[in-house]
Length: 339
Image (cartoon, rainbow, N blue to C red):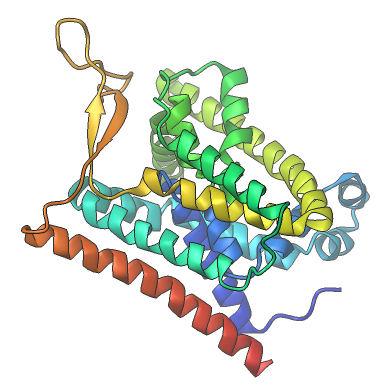
């Protein structure tokens, strides 16, 4: 049995879902880190494990209350509701700032990841001949992923389903950014920008009694892609949660070491001072995707000029990001003491 949650607990759980959703949208940031730092990672994984054959039997037999209790329904409902709400609110705000104040957004998240590394590793005192190699492997994988080149956009439905499975890794694996993986697969804009915007526009029209979107072939194709992507994501969530549940149960210290190494290695993705390199044709013209946007080839990282005020402003946001994580740590400790 799961302990009863107060109204304040439920509110903060929704907020955590909100932050997870926003984190999953930002390339380089993992929603799983939010779960890990927020102290509900294991409950999240084990709750997802309960979405199994027994749960579906309860559902199909009309035993809705039993299904809700068995799957830790209140926890998952509040968390997922926060994530969904985030995609139409906080993530829109993030898009706005990424377009206008990109350096400061990257700096804040860079600081938050630095804070996350401290938070996860400060109480981990089990470094030994097994966990040290595991941490190094995680570090090397994180660094390697940071420097991969993005692929071209691909709207094949089987590939979209695969993207759905891979993208939820950011929610279940701390340090692995699902949105960054989608950039590497070439489908970030298609699946996390175009599809979400198409759904938002469709829902807005439906609420106004306008169903003309059914006669819009491009909109219907985008919604079909979003449906397949969602099915892939749901499949990935359930399958990965069972795998991770087993790993956490039998190899928790090794898994934690890999996570610490991986998060540290993936810092390169979030390095604030970088220029976007776009793909060009042989004649030097920029290659465009189906939406007319420039196709990203890679990022060129550089050392900041400390004589610029903008650099110091970015450093302030890095410190702010670290402070946010330290504040979460403080909140978590005080909450445990009150109990």
